[in-house]
Each structure stands twice: as C-alpha cells, then as structure tokens.
Length: 220
Image (cartoon, rainbow, N blue to C red):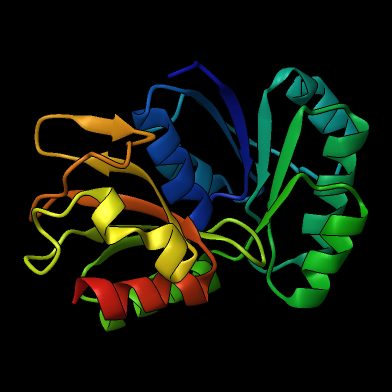
C-alpha cells in the first residue's frame, strides 16, 4: 500500500472516524477543526492536529495543505464553510479533493467547483446496509457509478462445485465475476474452468439489477 498524506477538515463523527482509520492504515493524517475540544480529543490519535479555520486561504497556505496528496472536507453541518474550504483546496492545487455532501444541492455545487469525489456517508451506508439485509449472500455492496455496482457474494451450497463456465453469469445475467476470494488464495480474473466452492466469496460487477437477479435466481 502506497503511503499517502491526508488532510481531513472537520473532526466530527465522520471526520474523526475517517481520519483514525486512515492513520491505522499507515498513512499520515493532519486533522483540522475550528473546535479546540475536538482537536484535543484527536491529538494523540492522528499524526498532526491543529485548531484552524479552513475557510481562510492564508491559514491553509501556512499549513502547507497544497503538499498533501488528498484533502477531505468532512465539515458536518455548515454547507457554506464546506464549499469555501473545497474551493480554496482546489485553488491551492491539492491533488485530490474529496468532500462530504449534506444535500443533493450541496453535491451539485461541489461538483461544479471541481471536487474530485463527493460522498454521502449516511446515505451510502444506508444503501449498503439495506442491500445486506435483503440479500443473505451479500457481504458488501459499492456503487461504482450511476450504472455499475461491485458486490461481494458468498458462494452457496446450490452453486458449489460449478465452474464459471457452467454458471455463466455474463451470458445468463449480464454480470461478471472478476475475482474469487478463497480461504487460502485470491483468484484475480478467474478463467471459465475455475471451480466455485461453498463459502468462497465472488467479486461481481454489473448493474444493480443484474447483480440482484444473479443473487436471487442463481445463488439462493
């Protein structure tokens, strides 16, 4: 895993959780918040923390944020501050700017100012949990775009012992198995002759409808 420097602006529930996880994954994280109490709480958990106003260009410049690989605007409830911080980060030349959106309108503005990735943490998590609840074989679900989804599906007893050629998800359901995670190995780009065994985890790509159909008709 490549070492990446992150700046996380906003240390509320989402920002603090994100920044701690990035730190535990071995990356350098600078946590920025106006609230001194929040900064103090995170001071021993992140690489660096600072009490600062991220809507002030000179402050961001003095912190050297332009040298970070990625900046995440995780400001919780102030849309104006979120947009202003994102604009400044783009103007300062941060390589990748990610921002949390609170509403669809907020997301549209962030998109127009050139934010590289916009996330809806609560909505996205809700979608993933909903899919996991209704699909017993689904381990994870990530929307790649408006059209395509990638999902992790557990091989059931019903299809155990079949080769990918016999299962043929592309021809029958329109989706593709791009990897198989076995207990002792991961097969990337499996061939038609690879055999599925119960409890293997298939990484499947396709539209939501294709994956739902595959899971309900072939696996259950």
